[in-house]
Image (cartoon, rainbow, N blue to C red; front, top):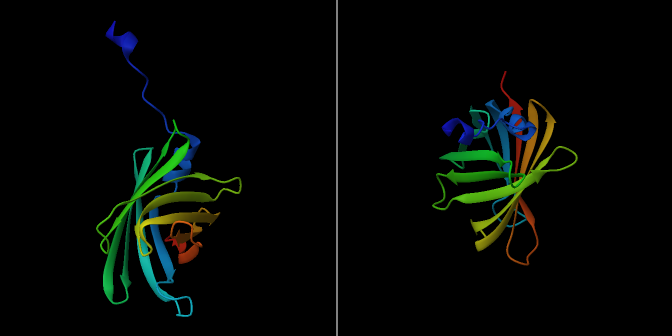
Length: 164
């Protein structure tokens, strides 16, 4: 009788496989707009080490020297097959809040994620990120922010190249 109640072990979907295909070490060229629009962007180089957790999740650890200070960020990401949405959390060494994002892949294959949380524009900052995949070994990550009802501004652009 107990065998009749057992569910089959879930299997990764195509979306899970796409996500876990990002496992590896990535070299990252970072451009960040942190001040007024007339100020030049801050640039640095970093490394993102992405590990697959089974066939469903990835865990990424990003490291760089940001303006003379060591910066570490940690991402957990997966795909919720019930809601048909990608989900992601982000924590880093410069902030005491966790960021939660949710999103979908677009028809062109890019990933767009959105969330609301604490940011440079206050406690209800709207965040939107995009990942454009140029090849299995190259992608561009962009982050945009806005205050409620305010204009969206790009705050980051990271160029990823998979290390061979």
